[in-house]
Image 1 (tube, rainbow, N blue to C red):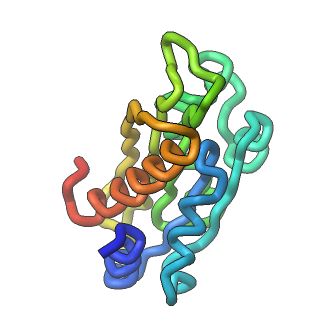
Image 2 (cartoon, rainbow, N blue to C red):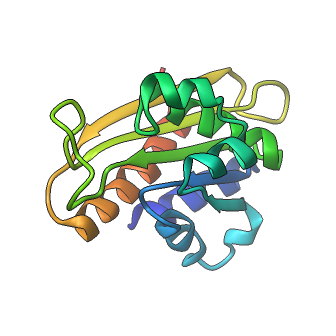
Image 3 (tube, rainbow, N blue to C red):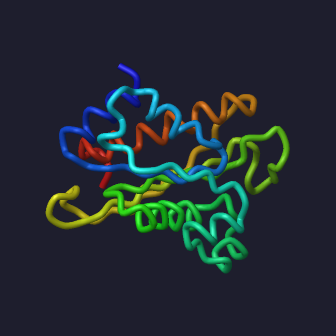
Length: 167
């Protein structure tokens, strides 16, 4: 079973809605989710926030966070996930920010550096616990391979969270 299919089952069973904020994947995650029939039952929205200005305007990512840590960072991924959840009212916000290449890498953050964030609502009818999780990956391959791997890892993070494998 494809991760987007497994994710759909889990979200549907729990009656939860998901929103995504994508930078380096450029909409690939939303595309994969909506490839599954019935995804309108659990998919709230997808925002492609490629520029720093878009991250600030639509997701309320603090400019100071981008300046201090860079757009590709744990802090920005966390703010993006929280921001997309808040902006859409979804139960779960998912974010990705990274360097897909072939250029843009640095010694500190080489091509393939990716941060994936998840922010979940708490309370009755939601997931039952507070959660903000960020995972860092160092992926390899060409631009399209990195985008594909990132989308798979992002979907898997939500699956792991819903199945209780994320603290």
